[in-house]
Image 1 (cartoon, rainbow, N blue to C red):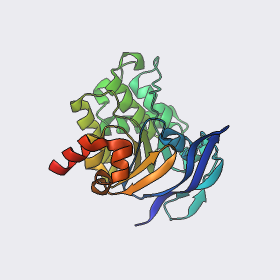
Image 2: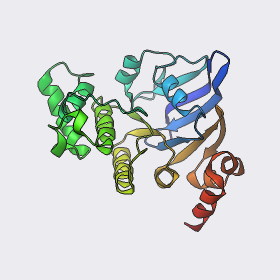
Image 3: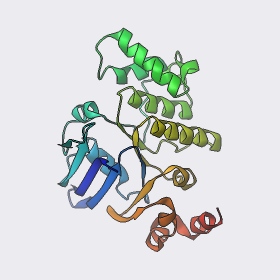
Image 4: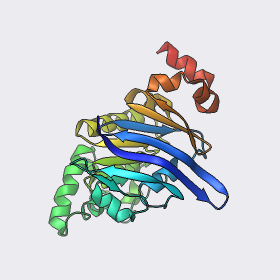
Length: 251
């Protein structure tokens, strides 16, 4: 299987603080790769390095286009990375409160089109895919947290990504809403989108992930299938805990 993104020896420092240390892993095309670890492990920092919000101290981020051509995106501007086909959401949802749901999603579509009519057409298509059509005329400030998170995903999808990075898109949701997001993620994969997900809700991540990468104190401590990660002693000690390990063995 070919890769969509390769992260090699990525290190990020803020002064003397080492946020990511020599992290390497691949994101295979049309896979769901999840990035897990304790708070402060460096997950969002790695997202920011991969999407141009931070320039890594050292290391390389490579993106492979539709023709499998390697493109070095290390430190490139965010808009260039997005135009290449990598979109992301944010841990703190950034809904445009005085714009409707439709207008929020249209802002993503304007990455590739110049006319409002085209942007609206693309936005409506995304709204149908994400189950937001009935909310299209609601202002951002009147949405629930679950709806705000879905709008954030929809706005990213409107940029027509080949790789979508989701930063804690299920945090704060109830069990029904989490299940809905899980189903949406699987549908996106079925449509050929590659996903990298940061999430703390292991009951949601384990069933849908093809591969899991574990960070602790900025370092990669494990990489493998959900089952391999659930049985990894170092991961259990650092993050999952014996309770989750016992539960995973029963299921």
